Length: 458
Image (cartoon, rainbow, N blue to C red; front, side, top):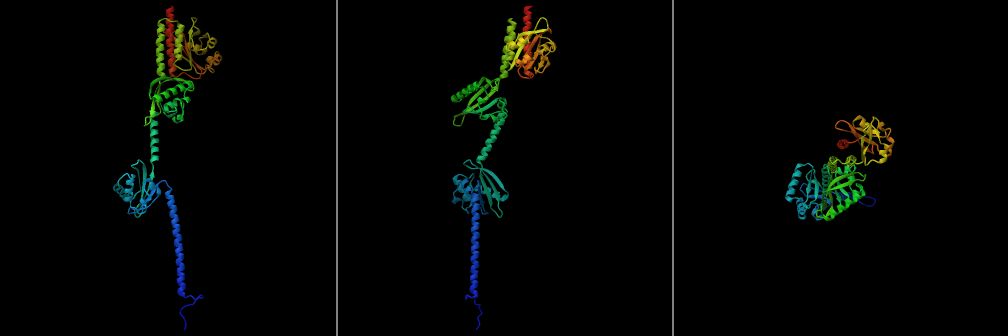
């Protein structure tokens, strides 16, 4: 009899072969599935590692408000344990846990209400939230298809504080730069930490920031800087402020000015002295005006008292020189011959120069004084070395360092030339407005003195 089953070389039936083949395929599928699972787990592990190493807290909730995923930073931000942020944990439980540790700004009910509004809008949102412990958290929410949302949480406390401080400092700088007086803050070592524009400009710094870290040693002559430091140390030690102290300041270049200074100790919230606040006003013009007024009164009193003309004219010259740094003044008197100008007063001009230029004659090209007496008007020579008026006297002026000379005639009430008043400068320049006024003022005083002396002699 024949058989319906095919016999294989190994003696196995078709059914058995089919079963074994099916098992082989199943094993292959299982191995492939297992490989896919391993690859997926590896990928998830990589994603997890990436999320756990970013600075923001990240969390994902499904449509039923249960946690799907969150990274370690999210738990750290809100001081939650791993058990409190396991996948599947309801949002309400997480917020209750946050309330318990003091990291939720609102109650769970209020938080859920806000979440409902965000979910209903369907648009991305972001907000800045202040936690009960003072930290500022920036939260961004994005709805997910099919319900749920993903959020990022970032602690921006330091960034926001830094921006606020920077903004405050900029605002403060803009404010103090509007103050025309000098204003500054120093630390306990005497270094500038805040400076306004008036002080920076006056001390020849392009920007206020360029002065930060400097001290009086870079601004003033050594003696003055040392005196200022001693005063400020005593103010910080005693806690007693210095109010409206008038000080003569000499800067590093040798220029002098008068300032009125107020300095008070700066204290922190523990009442410790941490520096010094100062404000000062340039009162040079006021001081000069006071000196000028007092000098004028004194000279007029001596004129009335018939003091010697030479002494009075010396005082006129010295008074004029006290009003402008770096100027040397002289008065020449016209002789009876009507053409010769001789020395009347020049206490600060060297005798060799006066001797070399004695008996200047009135004439159109006889230096500044001879030309002023000839023209009967002020003559301004800004550069002695190039002006033809000084051809005969250029060498002697150069030897003594004079580069410019401005002279005005002294004219009596009757219109007669009595002499000249002149100012010499060691720099090439013309007089400024206040110096024009000073020349006229000194010439007027000299006229009064000369006319009084002549009237007395007559």
